[in-house]
Length: 371
Image 1: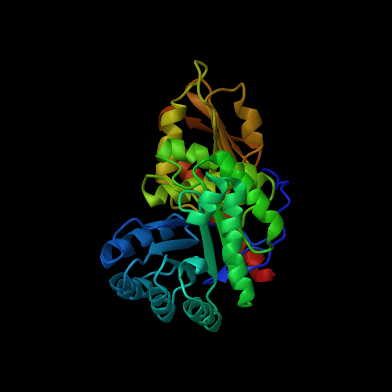
Image 2: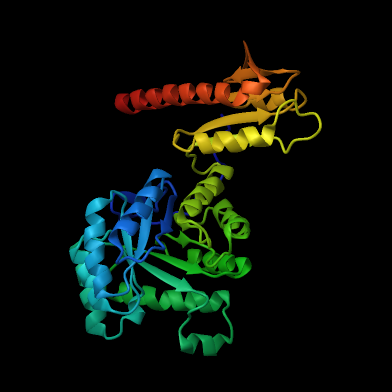
């Protein structure tokens, strides 16, 4: 029920990673990367399916060896989400995964070596309609660029990126996206700002090696929030030292907070105080766990008192305002006659949310069909 985002997106060209559009105003795609051994096909497939379940648009898989490339072939057959192969130096691996149906190659052309090898990969990508991601990282810049700048700077990262872009330009290949990641927020943000002014291709956002689940989520939210609020960014990956599933959840939470893209329930909940008439924290935590399967966007306010409760509930799809033993219940901003027993509020609210989600989903399907 909250308004659309006021952010004006940077104009870019569009590529397709499998069936997922990236750039030119397409919804910002949220992606993650597997951390299983790629040669362990069962474990990797299980992790990709877990990422699919929480809404991953794209999943990246590391393919460092030919054995991993053979495993990739088996993995690709068992999942639906588009897969990006992460390759660094061996051009033969890129050719092999292209043969096996990869949806995007993460490979820096300047790192492949000889011109004929670069051309072989680019020609193959063009022939099979496979986009490329150029991925520059502040921690692994080329030696001559390191010597020139002394330390990672925005100019250093952008020079490295443009070195690879120029190679693709020379080979008349424009189906690519670029990232200039760094673990320092200001370094990453300024690098992306500079790059955004120099190329028209889509930008893949990330704060690399951001840290553990909490600190990494905060750092990513700050850095990516700065860029996204300026309209910069077409796809993103949150890099956490945590379960990759958490990366997807945090990615959607960032987009949701900026009203760029909604998926699932946006809980508006009070931090609690002595006015609360029921356990708000326990209620919200339990509902978040129970309702992870709901993908339809919805605002649900859970406020423990009648001071702020009605106002938030009136601006939500569903909401409750805590009262003495019973809480007021609102739907689409209108207070209902029905009241919730505070001791049973979780079950009652879950039932209402599921019913509302089903109704909204049906309405969306009818709207789409009519269009």
